[in-house]
Image (cartoon, rainbow, N blue to C red; front, side, top):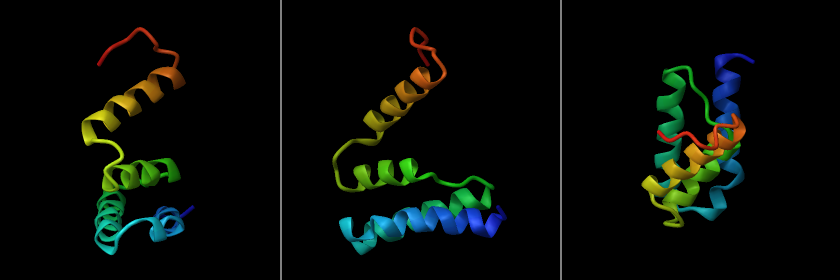
Length: 83
């Protein structure tokens, strides 16, 4: 996939959920997608869903960070490690 296609895919993930969030929240997440793309990083659908949870107040940023760490610990079978 090209850079533009990867960025468009990240935006498509956001568009899939745009009716669940305010225009301001949509714009903030879209901004982050753009910043990521500048660094040649692209948001997955899971990333977008996590950002939406924060925007909706369902989880704090700190709690999300811990949740993501745990996801990766499980993914890479690092259950006992702390960071």
